[in-house]
Amino acid sequence: MPTSYAGIKRLEVAGSYENLVAIFQLAVAAYQQDPRFCLSPEACHVYDASGSDTKVVLLGTTQFSQLFINEAAGKAQIVAVVDDFKVGKMESFHGVPVISSDAFLKLAHDTPLISINGCRYDYSRRYFKSLTLRNAIPMLNFEQALRLFVSGPASDHRIDDWGGYIVAHAEEFFALGKRLDDDYSRFTLFSVLLGHLTCDPEWILNAAKPYLTLYFRSGLWLPGQNERFADCGASIAESAKAFLDATDGRFQKIWMIEPDEVNQATIRSFIQGYSDALALPQSGVIELLGCAVSNEDGQMPFLHEGGHGGHLLASATDQAICRNVQVRRLDAILDDSPTLIKMDIEGAELQALQGACGHISQGRPKLAISAYHRASDLLEITRYVESLRADYKIGLRHHTEERWDTCLYFY
Image: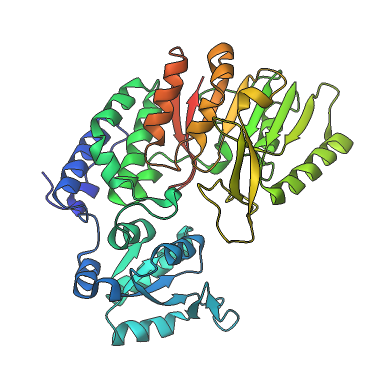
């Protein structure tokens, strides 16, 4: 039996759901003994010696680096961000100086520090991994950095460390694995759980499918050519375009539901262009509904960021992009019953499903529901949908090489 994370990581997965469950059990036991079991001992030594005065250098001017800057206020001393392509062109990144790799090596030689690899893509990630290994500089990935520096929930729930929740609910995850309707879904579940539990996205690579397979190319079902599609979190029209491709442009209705004012302009342009140039004789109607969806009607503050990041807030902030939006129940705003509902709404999925309980219980639409914004999503979303309809088949797919885009499919 392995006594370290290195030993657990090298166990043979062999494409087997059963083997993966056994590895998951070992990781749960290791976490219970020490939540930092999967972190670099050298990094832990530096942190234990300095605490919140620990000097940190971020590797890459990336979204993950930005998120860590937001979360680490008062918990670390972030002294630099390394980006050889932007040094000299960008003085600072979210208030942190941008330096070269050479300057980073000199700094690490003179000062005990921890480096954090925030890169999302393999080439850059491998470059920094090799650089730090060759020079014996302690390095953590983004997930590991959150576990070491951010105790308790993150200020942004979408990047919480799931480890404690997974361990506390391990038996429920075992039950979910048995409830899923195909072996690949079960393999995906425990690959994703191991990725979160060990802070190691290499586990997720075991099961990850390309992003372009999200929603309509999961291998579980295909949309028909007479669908009424409720696109909750329509964003920049990616999902609608993929739906049109999957159905050859044949459908009854698409409701594009999107509260972000920046994205609404993009969607209007998409709808106009489709109406002018792309519509087929068999095509139906595309409608923009400029609101958020939840379990009650009203208003809530919303961050109008554009792209994929805008989301509802529990309370207003002083940010210029924070403005109230209308919040509606899906049951109240659709002029027909949907046959297909997709949701990617930054952690508000459970409440939005509650607001669609009439459509789900009466019409049994196919559902493609994002389940990666909160540690509890996989369990609570499945539990709620089953409370409405016990006759769904349930599948699970993961559609990127990192923590984003785990999707539950009910069909």
